[in-house]
Image (cartoon, rainbow, N blue to C red; front, side):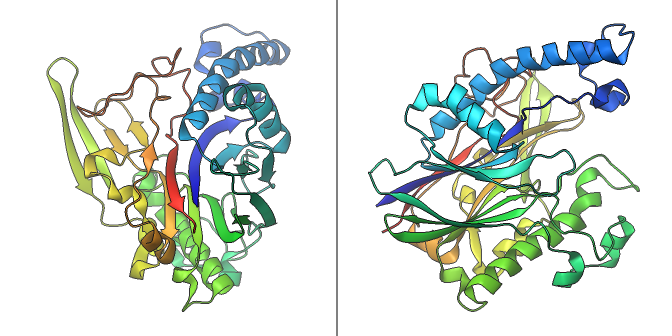
Amino acid sequence: MSLRLATFNVENLMNRFDFSGYRNQLNEDRTLALFDIKSEAEYRMLEQARAIAQSDDTRQLTALAIAATRADIICMQEVDNIEALKAFEYGYLFKMVGEGYRQKYTTAGNDSRGIDVAVMMRNETAQGQPIEFVRMTSHAYVTYEQFGLHTPELAALGNDANERIFRRDCLEIDVTVGGVPLTLYLVHFKSMGSPRNGLDGREATMPIRVAEAQAVRRIIEERFGKDHAADKRWAICGDMNDYRQRVKIEGDSFDGYRFQVIDESQSCINVLTAGGFCENVVERRPEMDRWSFYHTRGPQERHLCQLDYILLSKGLAAKNATAVPDIIRSGQPWRVIFPVGQEVDRFPRAGWDRPKASDHCPVAITLDMA
């Protein structure tokens, strides 16, 4: 009995318009920046037209990427609300996969933009085993103080002890697959942001992601018991906005690109994998081929890295010792630099940097659940 499990940051799956760009240039789309817009009313009208036209191409590619995962259960990040998810699944994904993801769950988390984690599930696996929802538990309310995780580093970043740990949520989803229990922890950790205080964005925000990872581990250990948790059936799925390795890119398309694998000394992922608690199964792939995200701030700063994770409990990973996850990259825009031998056929209409399925790649794995 097998289950196909996937995770994907679909990026801003929204059913509302964001008009903040009229007053904040950082939020203004580059297309509208080209025009002399006389009033907020005119800006709102143009932003609506732009967003609608761009979203159709984008969501077709997002749906193609999800369809390519062949997932029975897919964990998602950056979903506005259940209505947006239903409209996307019926209007786009249903046309590609037919009788698809009838079960959909999300809840409001802590994100200031209102984008949350969510899950879609089929009624049964491809093998015909029933997938049954048992319960959903949000941990968005947990504070640093409650878990004893407040540190001077967090205080220096302006995080008070009574503030909530998770920037979105750690959404706990219990299901059964063919009668076998499985618990999923859906996460979307703090983004790296821009450089500050003499540190790059990753280093400056690391204490927040470390606290989020510590909180996830504690939630799991309290649920299953500290001495037994690693042997239970669970998986942590989501965008953790951090990596243990990156593939640095130098050169250009004329003289050729050069790729160098760099190990990082610190990562919030280490908190979760320490002591064999769980395994990052993407690390079963070759070092050069683990990336799910292309980062660039121009030619001087370019790398490929893994931001999207399926972490299997030690017990579930041992049960699936030979399973190697797939990373679906056909929805990536043409600006992404692929190492030699990894090139893929892009989905139709993918642009230089948009439209695209997402800046993130879906990660999927087939698990033996017997």
